[in-house]
Length: 394
View 1 (cartoon, one colour):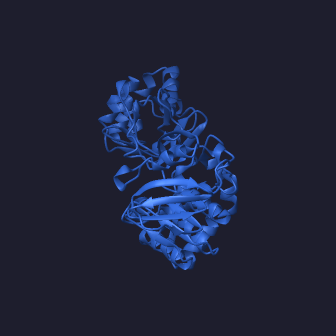
View 2 (tube, rainbow, N blue to C red):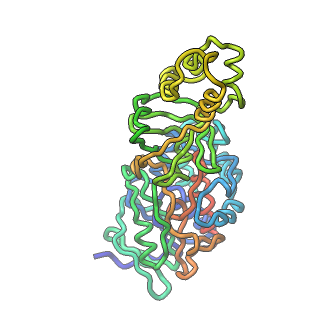
View 3 (tube, rainbow, N blue to C red):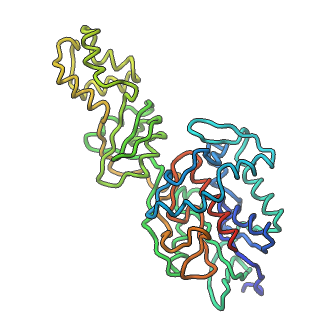
């Protein structure tokens, strides 16, 4: 049986980025805070991110780089706690960092520095962090939340759900946040894998034989496009451009890849005029990895010299190379997804405080909420900003 309950001002469920940020900031505001996590280590997702160097924010953070059923929801938190604010915190802790491509910021040394920083901030706020404690019961009565964890129990007038989504289950991720939200009557936007490799079947199977080939593309879905590398795998498509577009893709839809994003309109007919004895395969081999060039040439069925081909066929080949359609048959699922799209409905929450509109004292932050950022540090910035916003209200 649990011992007599300990009393706190707030209990934060989850010792990931959002939970630790929220707890630290609330603790430093004079609140007595308890963090509980079933994992034996804090910040597990932080530790594996960015190849172990943690892509901790993006200097181009803006609300239009997030997906949500309510695209305006993230504006308040992101506007009040910015990437520059987090960079300031990182620098105060003497953590060296560098910018890679597209505004992505990484630690020079180790993601462990970010976790250590957050734990140090929690310590500065007098926060109790309790790891390796499974949460067995959560109840709400008489204005207080009671959480039973192992042989202990604690109560507080504020409870923060910061247990993330089900992506990367090997580090202990579950749908616990959704179960708890439903317990308190909050609606859930259907969760699905995001920033995840796509799988191919049918006519696209041929491209799976190119496993390991990578090339710069523009991946498009509707009006959305991302220019980065695409990687062909034994299961389908991966690489940064594909992970980005996967968040927009739904079953039954297609995506398009521009394999030659730097080529101007009419480049093939120009090549015919300038180099009539060149073949399409030779031309593509000068622009793409050989195996990919050979496969694309084969699929286009244009053997022989360019000089012998009608302009209309070259124009059609150019169009296909600029918008090669793929119909993925699925994704590699939550096991390979970097984040979860969907989650606790933003209609249930205040965008300023992250508090449930109809359940006083209940807050939800981070990946548990239906706000999903692009690849490249945007999801960590949402964790910091939503955690900070909730902390101001506790």
